[in-house]
Length: 116
Image (cartoon, rainbow, N blue to C red; front, side, top):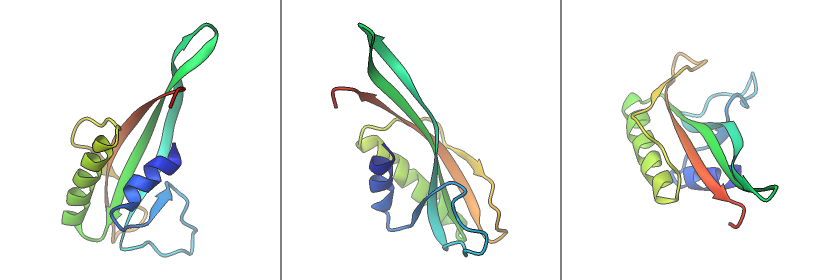
């Protein structure tokens, strides 16, 4: 599922990294996405078989440009929804380890049937 998420976020031309994966001495890109898998829980099961899994992720966008943060995250949310992902609300502030960067995040989910 991570590959599908990365594929969609990569369409915007910014790096996509797992949250917390930047090395200590690695500089922050000017703008980039991060993601973190919050859960991957069975949503339905019948006949002793798992039939669907609900994947939930935090998706954050960080940038040195505050306007780009809001604009890019809104567009990413729209693109994710076009590709079967769900996301509700306007997001939340995401803490940054760098004073030069501002971040916002959204929670996204995808219900995957075992038949897919």
